[in-house]
Length: 351
Image (cartoon, rainbow, N blue to C red; front, side, top):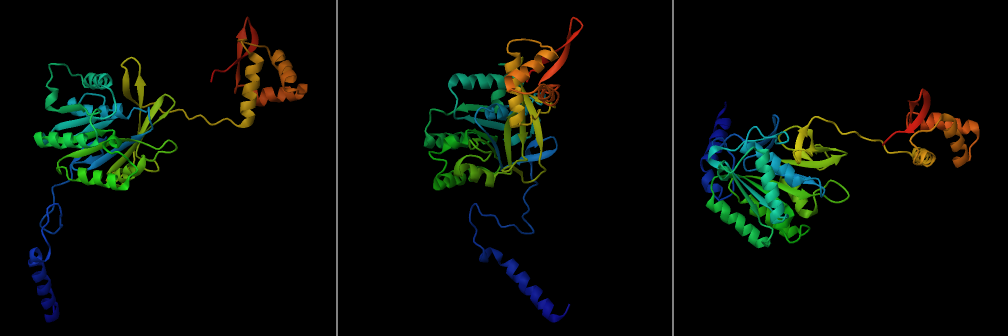
């Protein structure tokens, strides 16, 4: 190293040594350097081995109305109450000194809230003899206005410094107007000032016409979140995914998994069943379906000859055209062959 390089190195070291006098110390501002590495990122929510939410981070679950966002989020947190519970594939990890959950409901009546809480206790196999209050504060704030809701959160966090997760079940209810940019930004500023040990999970509605979280608030939550999940329904199977247009997982791979409603337990349960995707009918398929329904009416089964005769009559077709419709549009698509008294007949396929 020549003298010029040595001189330059000394100048750089001098600047680094004087950095405290060059850079203002402001509460809430972090300057990374070689000597102030924060503690390792700690996962709060995981799906299998995939990270979804860390301590101090934000996760957003969005869905259309009626999908059951609240029930899904309640299932997510149940693994903290009992590791044996069906938490729809999610594992929750909280540090011992911050092991309490604050769950805030903003939409449902007292009766609905108690039903939901009871179902959560059932899911986690808990009874009145279990000290659930040590792990969960479940609060309904529906009657409070926007300012009162925030004041309540501030006061309960001040009184309970062992809270490690806050669930906002109904993020939009903490604002008067979710499309107001200033109000949405102030809400984000408010939650950003929470203790760094607290992870935040939000539920929010999507737009009626797509899967984008609603309003300017939804956009801001997407931008700030580590992961954005969407819950949707395809027939009898429900799906949770980060792999959609507005979804993301900043520190992990995309995942999609399924759940379904169990009538016997009266709750959502995990499932490996896959949704059956039905292809939309073409106009000609719909026309054939309507024709078949008209021909069969209330009759359970018809002979081949009778069906051909009715196709000719109802659709004004020649005998050959009627046979073509039977073979290409009816057989094994709309009707199936059965045997009655050793004779072949055809019946409508239930769809």
